[in-house]
Length: 182
Image (cartoon, rainbow, N blue to C red; front, side, top):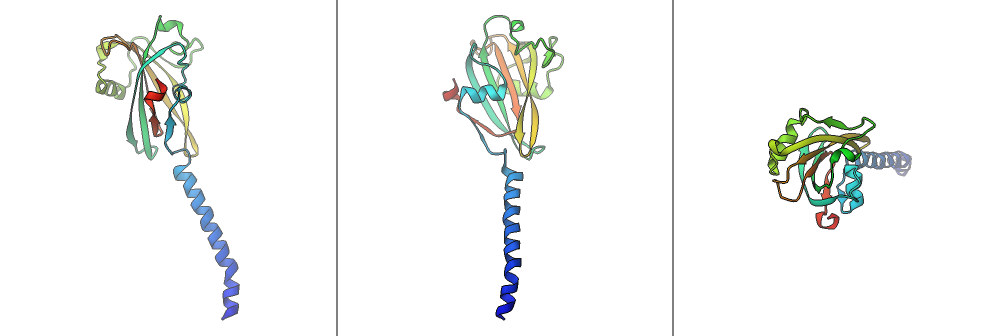
């Protein structure tokens, strides 16, 4: 009886090692780059929105989570309210001279989903003066997933402070510490 146990020890050890490897692999597949991102600094906001906020006033930041079955996780919809001085045409972020970005001078390409999201925060279509956008990407699991960042120049009737809103629907869960950023 003793010799049978000694002969099975290497097999049991190999099975245990394979199980540990499988558990680690499954962890990376389901959780790697899917954990909550802590948006608690201007640097993190800059990285997410691909904008240099050093010469603009951030008046508010709002965010909410939306379940997304396509990525099997949560999207974070981020609204950054800005007070921009001067014309947006003179700023590279809004009007990329190299042709990158989304150009929509006639407001013809506003995604229908964005219109509904803007209405939820109190922005009506007639308040939008200009629209455009940029792109960014973020790691989700083992993939890099692109997402759009739309900007809307609005009249100041919304809150009396903001004239530009950045909107991004980021395919990760992001916890924003608004007090620390503003």
